[in-house]
Every structure is written in structure tokens, then in C-alpha cells.
Length: 231
Image (cartoon, rainbow, N blue to C red; front, side):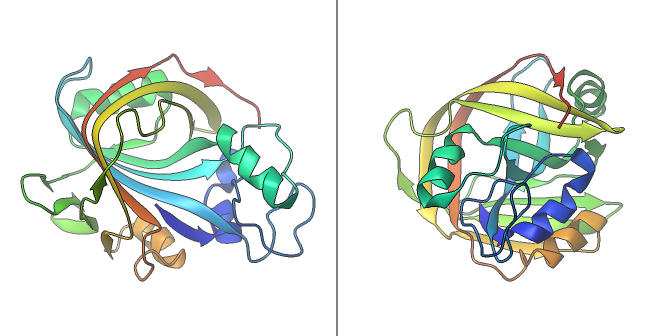
């Protein structure tokens, strides 16, 4: 997880009609707008799916925390912290390395999946992943696991949002994580020349220190049907 300029993050996801969540607000923001100098949350994630309805595959994600549609901007520090309990995750980019999950993800849930080569090295102390197209690297991420977290740590339920072909959707997820480790910092990002890499570079992710890094040894997930929403 990284903190990034809220105004720049809002520009990245403007096509969805959703509003960036802004846990650290800046000054001069108008009602219904992203405040100047505010900070948003951008997450990079990679997952090795081992057993599920869509078969085994690798996946990489670029996501931003967003306010639920129709929710007004919170006011004051306390209001912002309370509002963070209801935020969702907008999935901006979701490359995968298998055709079946590509087709299902796009047609069933409206996730912005595209086919890529996604090598992972999860055997060592440092967990590594890359996304490549035709041998050219778009992004590389390396994560150093942190301290063990108590059982049940994590976010058991979350609303995932996506926008494909001009339609914005919400998909409720239920998550059951185990062997969770977390630390401040702990991630290194290297960006290539893919358009999404250019967006991440403009957000400063190639030079920023991660807010936190989390590794999950085992994760079970249930995806509910997607629902169209009107931001």
C-alpha cells in the first residue's frame, strides 16, 4: 500500500465515475471534490490462485481505495477515519496469465483483465512478481514479509469496484486469510513502459516508500455476483 496524491489518483480513475477515498485530506477541498494536497491509497497486489472455479493462475492488481457511490466527502479528521470503514477497492488494472480466468473475469464480474506473462517467486524470503508483455517488463514488485499478525487479521469483507466498457460494477468479496504478516515499508517497485506503469510513475510509485506491506500465506475468497452501480 502506498499513499499517493489524491488529485492525481482521482484523475486516473475518473472514467469510473467513482470518488477516491482520502484518509489524509489536504487543504482547500470543496464539497464533492478531492482536496488539494490530500493523499489517497494505491495498492499493488499479486496472487497465486491454486484451487478455484477458474482454475490455477497468476494475477496482478492495481487498486485504489474509493468511497461508496453516493457517499458525500467526510469532514474533519474523525469523519475521515470513520468513513474509512466503508471504503471499497476500485480495481484499475488486473492482468492474469490464463485465458479462462480472463474471459470469466471480464464477462461475469466486469474486471479489467488482460493476458500477460506473470512470473512469481514465492519460495524465498523476499516474495517477487513481474508483469511482462512480449518479454517487456511492465512492473516488478518485491515484498519482504513482516511480523506475524493475530489470527483473523485482515479485511474479511470488502466491496470491489470495476469499470469495463463504460459500466461500473460492485462485487462483494468475503475473504478468509491466514498466516498474515505485515510491516511498514517493505516493498520495492520497478516500472517499465506499459501505459499503466506510466500512470504509476506519475503517482510517484517508482520512488515512494510503501506505507505498509502485507503477505498472506493462504487466502480463501468468495465472490458474489456483480451489480451495476451508478456513481
